[in-house]
Amino acid sequence: MTTIAAWVERHPGRVIAAIAVLFVAAYSASLVLRPKPDGRIVLGDALHHYVQLRSMVFDRDLHFRNDYMRMYRLTGIERDIPWLFESTPTGYVRNLMPVGPALLWAPAFLVATGVVWVAQLAGSDYPVDGYGRIFQATAGLTGIVAAATGVWLSFLTAAELTSRRTAAWSSIVLWLSSSALYYSVISPTYSHAASLLTMSAFWLVFVRGRNSDSVPHYAALGVLAGVAALMRWQDATILVVPAIALIWRLRHGITVGGAIVRGVACLAGAVAGFIPQMIVWHTIYGRALAIPQGEGFMRWTAPALGAVLFSDWHGLFTWTPVVAAAVAGLAFLWRRDRLVFTAAAAFLAISWYVNAAAADWWAGEAFGSRRFVSCFPVFVLGLASLIERWSPKPRTLLIAGGAAIAHTFLLLVQYQAFMHGIRDVVPYPRGAFNLWLARFVVPFDLIRRWLE
Image 1 (tube, rainbow, N blue to C red):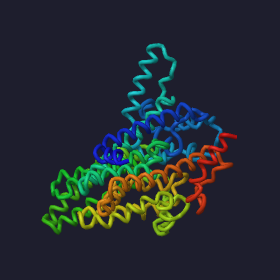
Image 2: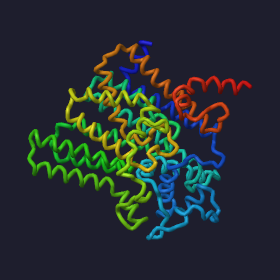
Image 3: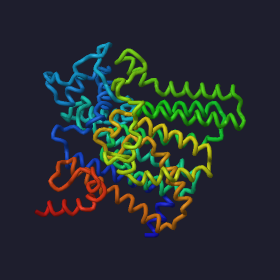
Image 4: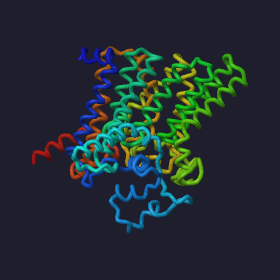
């Protein structure tokens, strides 16, 4: 046990990479062993990202109706889907999701296109049309790599403020015991894996340059914020971090004029990073800024502040209690670096409000409160600060971390069994017993059902 703990502490990068390889293997195996009846891999929200990529590469436009018809296997008579058959003022079909994930998936998608094209020249009859499972699989595999890279960047960020040992444990344990786990291996085609990557990159650059007054540093933060918003529009709230940094630096050296210059550089960088989304919106809706879901999607005056954290319906703390420990640990970050603490606390508070203000604050059918995956780097900082203050022995850390991971893994088994239709013995995780205790019974019920 001590040897395992030592390996995690000495080689966190290898551990993260090894987990990513296991995730790739598990995900790939699921595509072969449990394929969807209609042949699709990209489902739910992810399909809206995917059609943007497929249409841009193969049709060279942003007209998605043909993509939706093919992906959903529609015949054209299903007029009960108004968003599909009602055109926007510019003659396009609405798309409710950001373009960032499509751009992130593009390199692997293009490689797959090239491979299939060469194979076709060699005699293969696999169609080069962007719809096949080989093409769709690139989205999920890219998502796994993106999530693992984000975890690595979060580890590096925490290591700037705590020991590498503490940073390793906090990043790996949080990855495997929070909602990030589900969106790293079960549904890596959702935008949360991409968000984990870009937000982790932002926090690493911010923390490493937190004492810098250079204009390029603030411009870089702006670009990273804009790119993060490409993945998930709500991630634009990360701009509160450089704003707080500028206010902080006003008290420690720079002039008001200097702060304005840096603020303008940051905003210019954010606009530059967000330009691809503005182009897509202008093409589809005729304006550079839009809310595709409609104005009523955000209920700013009636946020579900308590429910989004404590409800048994995908509450952040009730589904993934390790996050509660991470948030509590942020208090210990104050003594280490007050600027980082203030920025992290402000960003977390704004994210809490924004997520609670969404009309569907429970985020549809989700594993836990998935929209908080954007806060993963902040949670890592909080858990790392808690562990650093606690200073446990490696054996204790391994036991505590293992318990947290096992606790979430059992819930994942229960959730997946229910979602795959095994509902005669597996309850949905809602309600005191079904959420907190059923996970310990479900494995035995599944084994007994399998033996019958």
